[in-house]
Length: 280
Image 1 (cartoon, rainbow, N blue to C red):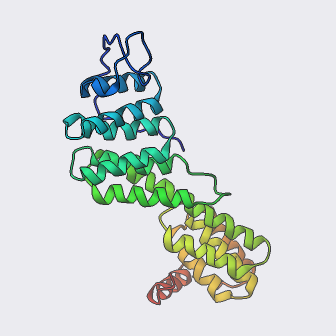
Image 2 (cartoon, rainbow, N blue to C red):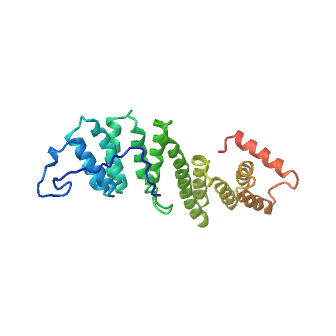
Image 3 (cartoon, helix red, strand yellow):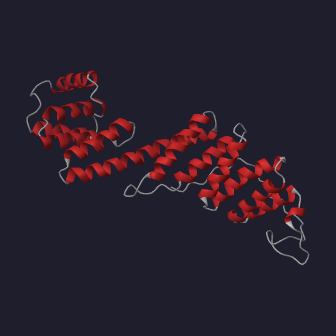
């Protein structure tokens, strides 16, 4: 899920006429050590490195601004630029380190929301397929939610909210994958537990209708007919036009578990009872 971070930090990318430099900037016949350079010179060199696609070197050079001129205005900007440079280089751990340092030093600064968003992206871009461990996905969700919570009015919060929905759907898909695995092997109670996680934690995702239908299937396999009817009633009330409801309806009518008349009314009465007793 690699996602290029939006950049609202203005790059000057000014071309300097620097005729001498140490190994950090490329050697020359007349070397000038980095400690003798001004904050502006070092910062612009880092910008050039970033513009050339060398994010790792750029991050290191931005860090030199902070090291040598810690109380300058450029030092503050260099920290967030180091985070962005590391992110662009795919060095997500260093990107998080720099972004977290920025938040520690400047929690109320105008770029704090961006720093928090970069932390979230560093996890989001590394979300793996549902067949693998989802620890990174959960970290992404936590940091995206933190972006929305701490900086609700920012442009990054709006984008984070969209990614929260996608991340929740991904986590729900993982639960469904495990639940279907148990269902196919006849471990019906374990399957139901997984499907209920989807309904309880990720009920706004598009995985919910299938989760309810699979609960109907599993309960019927266990001989728990009323529980199957209850799940179908919730499915019918919320997703009546879905194929999953049609499948559940077919299962129940095939076993003669629904009244021959007033089936819609029966489902609605069942749904009200289920909700009243807080089945979900």
